[in-house]
Length: 201
Image (tube, rainbow, N blue to C red; front, side, top):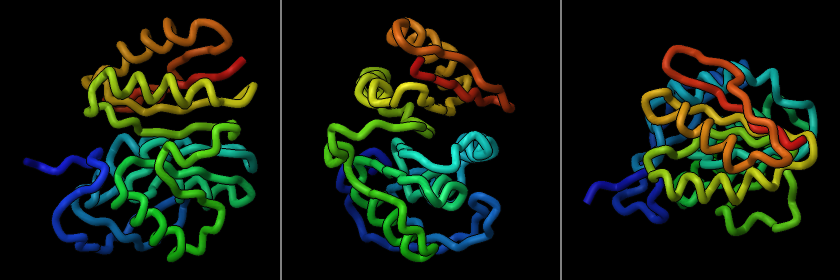
């Protein structure tokens, strides 16, 4: 059976590889491995999201939902060093790689954990995510129902979703699900990707 990046405990050898990437304007080298999301490079959707990193506030509490090997969380930490960044993923290998990369880049503001390990009283000023669409609608909706209500008043979530993977239908679902107390908008469209913005009013 093929391993998926959303497997909790991927099998096979944990063979790390080093790749060169640019995160928050810094040319860096990071470690990745098989059975995590986009191990060869920063994937296109994530890059579209990171091209709008100027929307990250200077300080506060951020969430990278589905952190993979850490491109979003690391970029947020480099861009906004005074912020606290929670990097969460169900994939243990992803969490280990994010930890390795944070240490290598001397980023100390990351809190790396499985979703259930995030304290229940933590609210987020911003959520940044290239959400795992391929887990299926039911699981994806459950994730968003859990985390979007944890936005602080005035806080925003930025979600990048490819059009052919259902960005428009996801926007309609968000508008219906969070019709009270939230404002949903399409921040931008870049190539085949949309960035959806959810703001707690």
